[in-house]
Amino acid sequence: MTKRPSHLVLVGPTASGKSALAMEVARRLGDVELVSADSMQVYRGMDVGTAKPSPAEQAEIRHHLLDVADPSEDYSVARFQVDVATAIDGIEQRGHRALVVGGTGLYVHAVVDGLVLPGEWPELRAELEVQPAADLHRRLVELDPLAASRIEPGNTRRLARALEVTLGSGRPFSSFGPGLGAYPPNPRFRLAGVWLPQPVLAERIETRYRDQLAAGFLDEVRRLAPHMSRTAAQALGYKELLAHLAGSCSLDEAVDLAVGRTRKFARRQRAWFRRDPRITWFGAVANPVDLLPALLGDWSLP
Image (cartoon, rainbow, N blue to C red):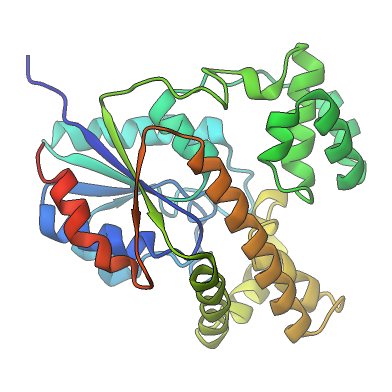
């Protein structure tokens, strides 16, 4: 039997330069195809605000799990798990390795650890989703503090889902599969992380928002607004620009809110990935592409 290839995973907080670094790795190694583990890049048309790889980049290196859902859909981790398994099977059949790149921790966990996903209790979910996010978060902290620590306090949909599972199943949401706190060895995947100094990352986040606005981010949100699901409308930057378009705040206020929310999210991403002992961290002073030689040295062998 042919030995299955060892796939690669590159993680880190938003705006840390993972995608640019992954492109350089793919160019140099030659035997990898890129697989996005980003919960918002799955949506068609959400291009500027998600920093999706350009058409030229996608033409140069084969990408997977981009543009697989309409923004009107509630794309879920369960659907991602099916889609990513299909993508990796195809990559293996072509004799290549997958390079999974992204910052959505639950998606990465689903790829590497094959999470056993819990059932659904729609009536309970409907009751929870109309409650204020702050109330949901306080309740989840009491019932499942581990899950609560890994969900944005203002994300009503995810908080309601965690409580739905916890209350409906009678066991913590974080306990499903190997559990969100379990990191069993998996020789099929070699994990690396990008680490930048926090002030550098904070500046990159703000600069990226300014660049995205100049590239048409607001027009993109205006075009998509009538068609966005609850999930898509929670995306970083999109939520704030939707509020601006609804007249709730000025454009400058929307950007400030988006920058602040994204910086908080990046800190949660760092905390999430830092717990995983399987990740080898590579730190750069400013430019993440400077990490290329070290990554290549670690990943060049099949």
